[in-house]
Amino acid sequence: MADGGRRTVLVVEADPLERERYGAWLERSGFDVLVCPGPIEPDYTCVGARDGVCPLVQEADVVVLDMSTESEAVLMGTASEELLALYLLTGSRVVVLGSHPGEEVQGQLIRLPRHPEEELLLAGVTSLVGAGP
Image (tube, rainbow, N blue to C red; front, side, top):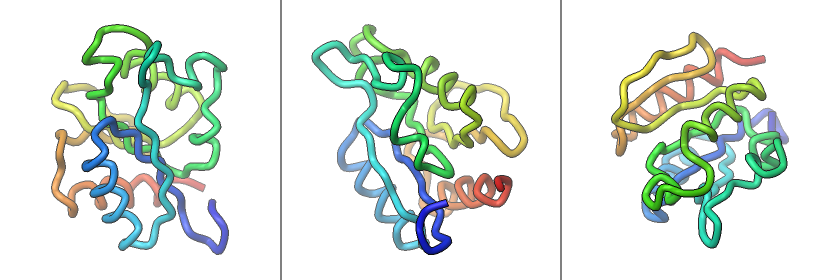
């Protein structure tokens, strides 16, 4: 948990406008926010995938991961599914934004559509924050 009892959310989003929008929503709701564009050029490899641990996720109570990363668009580097697996294996709680259906994991993984409305994103993050220590 971040200083003063505030929870921290890591937003992994390739689109800078979406990163800013989600961050603003979360900050208005009382969360501290870390942002990451996800895997980017030149090699589209995520630090977490390269080193086995993401320094940003270690500081976060919840991760919001948009599965439409730049590495997915160019089909090289760290795939979004690899990022998701890395986060889940470290015990992180994750809100996934994407159009692909999949299972949810009670208290650890929630799936939402891409470009969610503010209320839906906040509800997903809040439910996972409440599931954690």
